[in-house]
Amino acid sequence: MVEIYPVIETLDLVYAGIYGWGEALVKVTDTVVIRPDIQVSKSFMNKKPLKQYIREKIKRRAANQDVISTKFLDKLNVMMDHGIFSNMFKKYFGVKKTPVNLIKVYDTLRVEYGLAYDVPLRLYITSILSRSMKLNLINEKEIRENLKKLLNNCKAKNLKKALMECEDILREISYEAVNITIRRTKKMYDLRNKTKYFKNLVPVVQGLFKEDIKACIEKIFGILNDNNIMETYISIGTGGRVLSRRDRDNINYAVELIEKYSKEYDIKVKIHLLGWSSPRNGKGIVFEKIYSADSLTVRRRAGEGKIYVLQGDNIELKHVSEIDKAKFNCRCPACRSFKEWVLDPSCARRNDVRLVHSLYTLKKFYDILTNHR
Image (cartoon, rainbow, N blue to C red):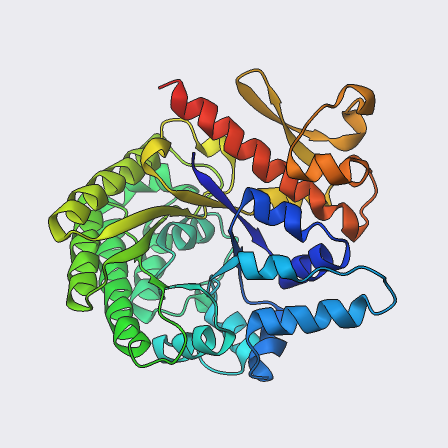
């Protein structure tokens, strides 16, 4: 069964402790993904491990309550994502986004896993083509110049059409993105070997074209071998809410290659889909060979009062006001103890326990999907 890791904010763990649903959370996942936010910033600036900071915050906020829970944090792993933009990284941590500073952040926070500093290629391209992101937000000069060239030569508003119009420019961007990603990854492994606490760096596979994906994976395994890494996650960057058939083919190709090199190098690998987000991206992907995927959707929709429900072999997203409480017989860890909060249509923070229900339901859905193949 594929593991689903929710992309959450640090405060979500604080509220999970205050309202007691942290134990339900760790029954459906052992890992959460956290991006830079104001609480992570405060933890780093105070030179405190993130879990220690969260524990202290739970106890302060729940000072007047008889029961508070922090033990669930001992069972939970944090996978730290460095975020997309370098200016946001500097805003939160007060230092420039570099491999050196990223390792320093991971080590200070004592997170269990930290993503290597990759180039989020597909997200860059789709955002630039749709004019939803400015070029000056992109840290990599080489990528920025080629994206400027793409904008000047391409009328397409999406990647699929851009590949037909400007394949040569996109090949340049893909090649350069892989080179930068690998250069940074190698540097970060060199640095991680010298840290006191942080050890579990997660390399990220990038590339728009199969030859670049292959080159990226080959070089990652070379780095792992040089550093005597015997067990690790490897993440595949997906970078989009909607994946095309080409995207799915590239993901499956990457999975196939990772399996191949894992056997050749005798390195145990857990494959993680980064930025996967939604169950509508699931069909056509070889989930039986993937260990985990992250989902921002479960957290966002929980705040909107929506949860995933199974309808036969399909999955639907429903607002809790549409659900008949009397006929709702879910026995997931959230609903067993917090059914009233799961189905409460208000936006109270205690009701974010809905994300636990949705995580459980997504895992069940992908179990069904995988077994039907």
